[in-house]
Amino acid sequence: MIELVELPELVVIGIAVEGRFEDLSRVVPDAWNRLFEADTGATAFLAVSTGAENGVYRELVGFMAATATEVPEGMTRLVVPAQRYLRLVHAGPLAEIYKGFSMLYAHADRRRLRTTEFKLDFGYAPGLPDAPHELHVALAPATLSLA
View 1 (cartoon, helix red, strand yellow):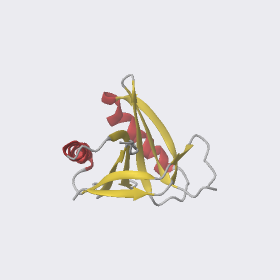
View 2 (cartoon, rainbow, N blue to C red):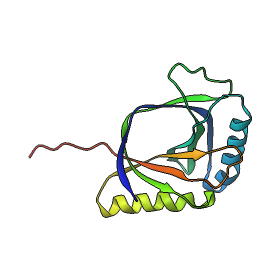
View 3 (cartoon, rainbow, N blue to C red):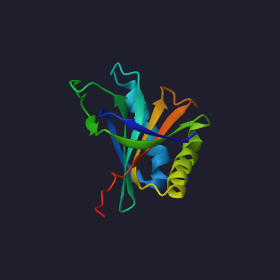
C-alpha cells in the first residue's frame, strides 16, 4: 500500500558513492560492506539517493545518527530536512527494489503529485539479506498560487 507520510529531520552518516548507472550494482554493495565492517555501533541503516547529474548518480549508504554523533574518518554527514514522501514497503528481493520505486513514481504521476529524485531506502542489514525495505520518494514542496 502506498501512503503519504511526513518524516522529521534526519541525520545520516555514511559513505558517499558516485557512479554511472551500470556501475552502481558494484560500487554500492562495496560501500555497504565497508560500512558494515566499520565499528559504528549503528543498528538502523538506509540508503539516500540524492539524484544524478550528467549521468552520474549520487548516493549515501549510511546509518541513522543523533545530531551530536561524531563522523568516522572516511564518512560524511547528511542532514535530511523534514519533508513529505510517498512510502511503500517492499517485501521482495533486494535486487527488485527498483520496482518499488517505479511503483511510487507511477502512483505520483497518476495523482499529479510532483516528485523529486531524492529517495530514502530503509531496511539494510549486514550481509544484505532480502528483508523488507521501506521505500520513500520525496515530494516537491507545494507551490502556493494566488487566484
